[in-house]
Length: 108
Length: 127
Image (tube, rainbow over all chains, first blue to last red):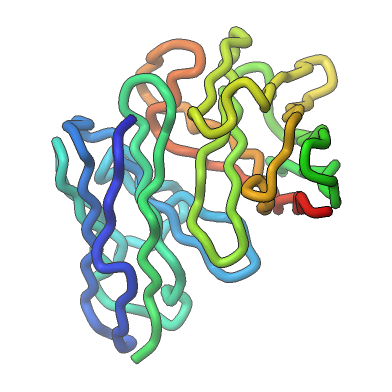
């Protein structure tokens, strides 16, 4: 199975900061990498799919990049509502569609 | 409104069984791959199973042989039959829809992520 590793596991930042979260796959997954945001007590929300395509309704301050094994999620200017946990997920080839362990973004 | 609503969670003893349901509305259920994802308290997301539009099914090793995913398109419903439950299966279980994108890779081949999620149902395995 493909393993997904996110870094960092947690991150403290301030409103207005630019933040980058990294996700690494144990083998090449082309661009079949998705990013989710989850707030406490709520279901995950799809932000970005196939590495860089913004899901409908997601603010443009979110962006994704990468291919092969290395991917990044960038938030250009943090807003108060962005403090949450972020997960990557690979959907390359057949299942299992594994998730990264998550990155908790906290207010500094 | 596109919506997924899970039900069927509860407390079950180790070794017991439970059947989760997910009611879909607001979209053509039969046209979408569907998934179950779980999350233990304070932990990350774990993909549990998927079923394609053609009824093909997929599982990770951790639940294969114990869990069975199924769908009933006439009732717009997704199910997860869970047998031989263990303490490690304790989690919130979400059903989710596979996003359809510009290219079709085949039944069960969800490439574009999971775009609609239910609110989750809690399963607790404990004596």
